[in-house]
Figure 1 (cartoon, rainbow, N blue to C red):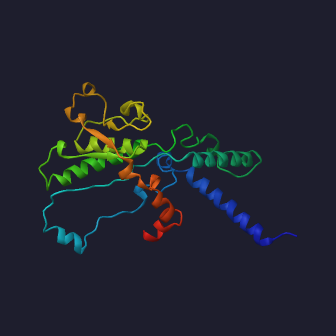
Figure 2 (cartoon, rainbow, N blue to C red):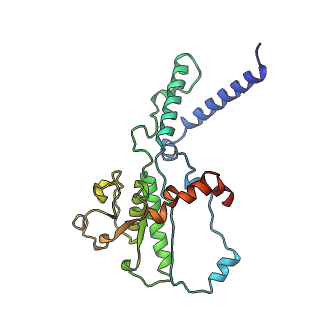
Figure 3 (cartoon, helix red, strand yellow):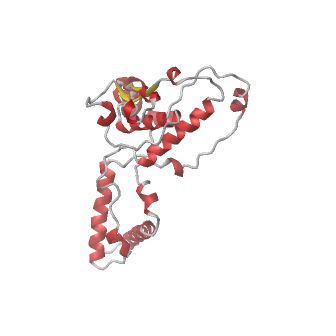
Length: 245
């Protein structure tokens, strides 16, 4: 016995996949390559600045200290996401070979991030934090007369976070353009969990004295959710953190 509802559902799903592929393979690849991830890219969030009563009250105050917390920039997908896309590619190619009406561009379209490091900061993410550092520095200099020695930089031990901190620092000091790098060992040594990381190459590489500043690795401060037993058992396991948010 044929279930017409199931057939209709399968046809709808197949049509949706074809529509999705048609849109993907007829758009600018740069946007697609830099947007495939398990999280929504910041540029798609529609975030806008706003004014509220609290902000208006702060305008009458003088800043004496600032703590700023930033999430890492746009990264590559996790291995599961990359594998699922590769598997989908194989299934659709098989369908194409069997005569399915899939766009011709599909056969020559590379699998995004197939050979990229997993969950690492993308060049776009590096640019995001470099620009963020420059804007943040400009804003803070309207309120503070500070030097780089007055500022401490912290990161978790996660590679993409260290790289984001490095990019932010480069922008914050208005440093020269720096080529994004994938491998943490290029500037953090070979330790699995380094105590700190130089925020850029040796001073002689660019003769920029400000690059002697270090970024301190502090998982206790920034990754408590990964190691704190009480948090894991009393909040995360029962999804209480979603209720709090």
